[in-house]
Image (cartoon, rainbow, N blue to C red; front, side, top):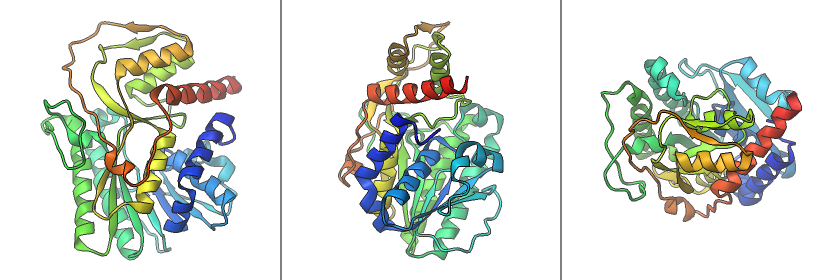
Amino acid sequence: MNPLHPTYASDLEQIIASVGDDVCSAGKRFFITGGSGLVGSCLIDALMLLQRESAADLHIYATFTSEQSCRSRFAHYLSHPHFHPIIQDLCRPLDWEEAVDCIIHGASNTHPRLYAADPLGTARLNLLGSLSMLKLAEKNPACRTLFLSSYEVYGQRENPLPYHEDEVGSLDFNSTRACYPESKRMCETLFRSAAAAGGTCAMIARLGSIYGPTVKLNSSKADVQFLNCALQRQPIIMKSPGLNKRSWCYVADTIQGILRILASGQAGEAYNVAHSDASLSDFAHTLASIAGVDVICENPNDTPRYELTMSSAKLQALGWQPHFSLISGIRHTYNTLNDTVCSQK
């Protein structure tokens, strides 16, 4: 993603306008895991812009699984004195002695196919990565540490009302796919335990269904597959009715929420980061309308219908106000990526 693309650049400016001063007061050295991901890459772009536009001497340390994953996304920052890439397998011990002010732990397998292909690796990365970040936080007592969790920790329940942070549903731990939500639950327990033990300001951001132009187009998530179809001017194919409702959040609003929690959140607390409640079918038809393609429901299965939506009232009480509706967020996503794809042809 080119941070100079006018639509994406306006997203970054919106983030900075909303939380810039609060972030600068929270610290100057940011340690981010999952730097090449949907959320992590946008977070890095926002902080680099803040560094450029503010008087604060911000430094961004970000982990990547390989030099290629860093270079393919952030070649334009590699010679910048405030950007410090770290090639690190978070399942291995982290050899890091420099001081940090803020830790944002977002590294995780997020592709459904990876859960099935490597369930043990998915759980290991979540758990060992979290322990590593908490160990780093212990070395920096004044550090504010945020774990990026998932709406999937809530599980399922019959009550269709939005989840608040103190509520929980059931999870089928007999399913191999449970490697992701169950390990995320355990990570939340680790972060809460660290906060309860004192000396670590550890917090949790429970992210809804996040989308945006920084997404990796090789993701196996359904909404990304829809996006690929739209960018190729092909009909969007749905394999199910897609009626299950969830809470979506555009990546720029998500970054604002993350930075708001980092600056103002309370140790040991979890905060939902979510905005637009809509079904997967709603997402597909909104994208199709913007891209000018059709939606085809091909051999739909009888997927059980349930709703998993989240209340963001607790985060809004910290001053977070999302700016993007589902329509405007999808339009920004499609227009930015469509321009990028066309420019590469």
